[in-house]
Image (tube, rainbow, N blue to C red; front, side, top):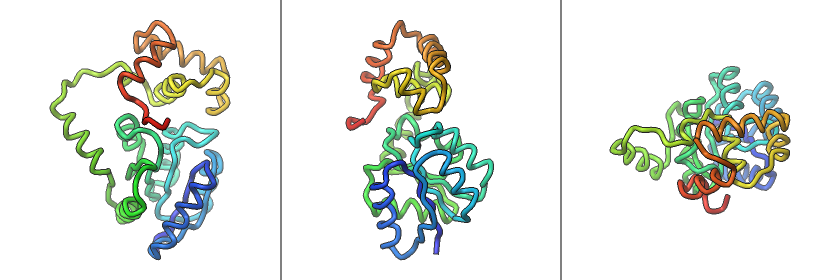
Amino acid sequence: MTNVLIADDHELVREGLHRILLNSRRFDVVGEAGDGPGTLELVRSIPAHVLVLDLSLPGRNGLDLLRQIRKERPDLRILVLTMQAEQQYAVRAFKAGAAGYLTKACAASELLAAVSKVASGGVYVSISMAEQYAQRLYEPASALPHQRLSDREFDVFRRIASGGTITEIAKDLCLSAKTVSTYKARILEKMQMPHEAALVRYAVNQKLFDEDE
């Protein structure tokens, strides 16, 4: 039996994942968490084979959290299950230590296949993601403006472009408003954008977000 941990800030999502995994009779859900600090406490205290991790947990940047978990529990296999668009976050997630990446639009059968794959020591990517990156092999190597950003800068950029205020972003990431403002200024400079509205237009034109975000 494969022991699985679930970290997602929506109780309904956790319940659904719990039910899907248990009904397969191949997995046992041994713990759940709804925020970043709770997830760290969970992985530190409960032995498991796989962590199903949402990147948008309150209280902690998802990629930073992923890196810390990998540092503290290198034996724990991490499957990212998120609403974040694959083409924008997947590579960053794998570089941070993920063993698999899925969006929440996936079918239950794909989720089970992904958990099995990472639990056995493999790496899981969806067919659509594999196709996207195969196509990119033929594209010019020059970086787009948003690809110049660090992981934290990219996270703040997406939140700004999604309509988040400085205060809201600061609260979600447990940062000061001054720090978020500094990130915003750095993002505008790196992307060579004159103002916040330009960031929004860029995000829309580059299709950085899923339609339901």
